[in-house]
Every structure is written in structure tokens, then in C-alpha cells.
Image (cartoon, rainbow over all chains, first blue to last red; front, side, top):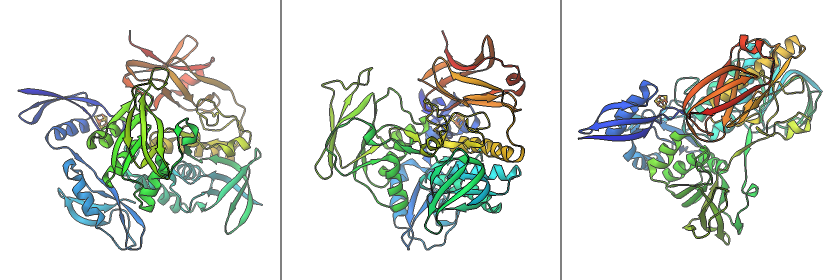
Length: 114
Length: 417
Ligand code: SF4
């Protein structure tokens, strides 16, 4: 049984409307994407949606430090990862790219992003 | 009084990119005046990702995007005064500013770049009945409190307006543990990017009520609830369609207004459509030697475009300092059918090079064509599967095309029959 799904690609601001045909849980055809990133997005989205998580952590000294996951993580895990992030209180100084938590989820690290 | 070749008012993404471009085009005596304690502007509080996809082919956070430009400005030793507020600008390019070390001081510039950015429309700009309790914020203010100060502003939230900052804050507040009950949008479409509807609302099951507005806010000391209603084609609430949400926080994301007080003070003509200065393609205003770029000129959706525009202005300012201004041969641009504005508003035919026209369409259209025409001639055209007001459109006119034009240029959108 083929099932049709309509998605909006979130990989760039253009936001292409994508039509995916899904069979046995995998994408068998992808239409509407304007670039290869959109195809990859749609293929992943019908199997296991993932997003990069961005948030802040409070440094020991009180400042808020922007952080993100170094790669997309499972959408269903976002709230759990937030709980972990809240418990992180690094020491300054830090610079962009510093790893705060190794493999916070799905092999992605929590890194400083500002 | 101090003398400078170029003074840049504002050290956000526009000001930084303009400074770097001016420097690289041969003017070294540049001064950036920044009101906040650090440069980077609004990007500092935009911790979400998605910046820089066009420019760097990477998805960066706001502070990461800003850091790349701050770094470049540092490498060039471009002088920056932070914590410095510009009080006034005059037509002859004299700037009066104030900070806590120098007190009030004046700078005389050969060229000025306006890069003050924009501010949010406030609740005061809307007519909403009810009390005036605590717990009401503009989305950008909320973003600053949450991301920079680390406060969770409330637990039960309703958002009015579906601009990008409102959508981003719906996700941000949800991740921080708040419940966002609704995002109301008075228009039949969201003014935010589609990707933000998906990844900020749909991902978290937050409902978007199109054609809805807040009709009452309740609460004594703190917001206790809001009533929303559906609106008709004339944006008037329809009786009997009310819904009620108990909440402690209301965010407004109802549009941005270029911050042009200084511009007005210098008698620089503004466009009623963009609410920014009227400019030539090099972003020179109608006062010679004063340039404008970024959100003070037109409200952008993507910082990548801000940087691009600021570089044009920075190069323009450097040219002005090095070569002075020549005789102009201006052609006007105007918005035609289904287009709400076009920028630049004037094209100087004596300036060589391609001209990129930036514009916004006035509604959502499918299978349409955007066109630039002059008299009977079509100058540029592009087919679009979809065009929406939330996304800035562009058309590029080649330099040979610009040279051949003798009548005003109109940009319009044609729907397919
Ligand atoms: S398919 Fe490509 S162009 Fe379209 S939204 Fe996705 S990344 Fe952007």
C-alpha cells in the first residue's frame, strides 16, 4: 500500500512543498523539492523526523550561553534533551564550537553557539 | 569635533557588513557607533539556527552569524564605540552622540551609513479592549528576557501575530516548559516563513488560528486570559465566534517598524511603503553621502539579504568618499499590480553595473510570474510556483538593460489565467 504525504521542507527559507510516496515505512518517490537537500529531508522525515535543537545554558557565573546540538536529533527526544541541558552549568570562558556534552543524543554533541 | 571618513550608525549585521565593505573598498577611517554594550545587534538574542544558509551555505545561530562579521571587523581594526547613542544627525553629516566616557560629542563625517535596524510594533499600536495587566510583551522583548537574561516569562501563553519572531518564541517558550495555547493571525496567511510554521508550531502541536485576533485581554495585576475571535474580510471580529484561553502571558508579534527618527531629523525623504529612506541602487538616500541599509531601510526576513544590502551601501559610501558624487540620471521604480513595494526606489543610470530589485508581493499567489517592465518593454521576468508576502522577491536587471531604460520601471505580478 502506497501512502501519499505532503511535507514542507525546513532545510532552507524557501520552504518547498514536497509530495512523498511512502511504502512499508520508506519513501519510494519524492516530488516538489528544488534541491537534493529536500529529497534527503523528505526521506528522513517519513522515517524519523529530526531537528537541530537550540537553547541556552546558564554558566556558573550566571550568564546565559547559546547552545545547539551539533547534528539533528530525534524530534521525539527534544523535551528530554532540554531537561539534560538545564542541568549543564559550564565555567567561562567558552568559545563557539566548544563541546559541553558529548553525545547528548543520537551521536550529536551539545556545543556552544554564541 | 572629530572628523571621520565614514560613520556607521548601528553595529548590528547591517552596520558591520557595511563597515567591512567600505574598508575593503579603500576607506580606512571608519567609525561604528553602537547603542548596546556589544556589536551584533538583534542577532545576539536570536539563538535559533537557520542563519547564513545563502551566504555561508551553513545553518548558523544568530550569534554565530554575527561572530563571523565581528571577527572580520576586528581583523581590519575598525573602530567601534559601544554603549554610544546617537542623538542627532544633520544633513551636513554632523553626528551628535553620547556615552559614559566621552559625554556628548560630535563627529563630522564625509559619508554616513544608517544601519539602525527596526523595532517592534507595540500593543499600543493596536486597538485591543481590556485591562492593562502585567504579562504582555512584544515577542522580541520576550526573546531578550528568555535568551539573554534567562527568565521564563510565563507558563500559559497566547501569541498574537504569526511573524517569525512570534513563531520562534512559540517554540522557545514550549521548550522551556511553557504551554503555548494559540497563535492568532488576523490575516488569512502567516507573515512568517513556512519552515517556521512547521518547525515551531506543527512540531509541537501548537494551533495557528488564521483570520483571528485577540478581542479582549483580562487580568487585574497579571494577565488571566484572552478572548479571541474570528474576523471577516474587513478584519472586523465576528460576533459569536469567540474562544477563551486562560493564560498568564501574551506575546505580540505584529510587525516591525524601521527606526528612522534620526533619518527624519536630517530631513531625509522616506518612502511611505517601506517606511525607510528613498534610495538609489547604491543605497544612497536623497541626501548625497548619506546611505541606508538593512532593516532601517526595509524590513528583511533573512539576515543574508541584510549583509548583501549593507555591502552595497558600504561600497557606495566608500565610492562617495574617494570619488565624490557625480551627476545623476535617475529613473524611478514603482510597485505595480500585486506588489506592495520596490527597492531601490530610484536607479541612477550613471552608476554602472547590474541592479537587483527587491520587492514584496501583496498576497499569496500560486503559479504566477513576476515582471519588471518599463513602458512597453519587459526588462526581467521570472515564473514562481508560489509567492507570498512573507518572502522577499528579487529580479535582477543587467547593466545593459538599465542603460536602455528611459521610462519608470514598474514591478508587478501576473497571475496565470
Ligand atoms: S528542497 Fe532545497 S530549496 Fe526547497 S526548501 Fe528544501 S533545502 Fe530549500
